[in-house]
Image (tube, rainbow, N blue to C red):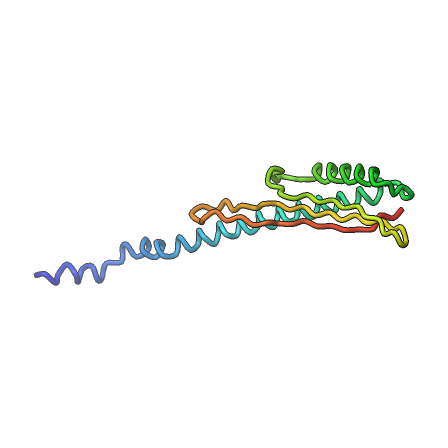
Length: 146
């Protein structure tokens, strides 16, 4: 008499789908959220590189080639930084931790170079995962030639 309910349960498959989903569902959700998080990080990395490259292009066109005065180079660096900030698309400017614009002159042949590095403090927004942050960097470097 006691074994009769267990025989019925052994043949009953009405809850099998729910049990299978209980095992597979969290894994699928984790993979889905992880994919979107990876795409978001890749997008922000692309925006940082784009901004640095746009600022480098701006620097290549908008400078006086014969002027090597340090005050002039500092003002050019500020203009370059402002131009890079104008090309930030859909990212939080408050998370930019380091924005380095270096305009240098080689004293030997008087060639000018500009290098731009933008650091962004990326924090994950994926639920149920401990909040981890890491730094994304966009870089660009070029000669200033007219």
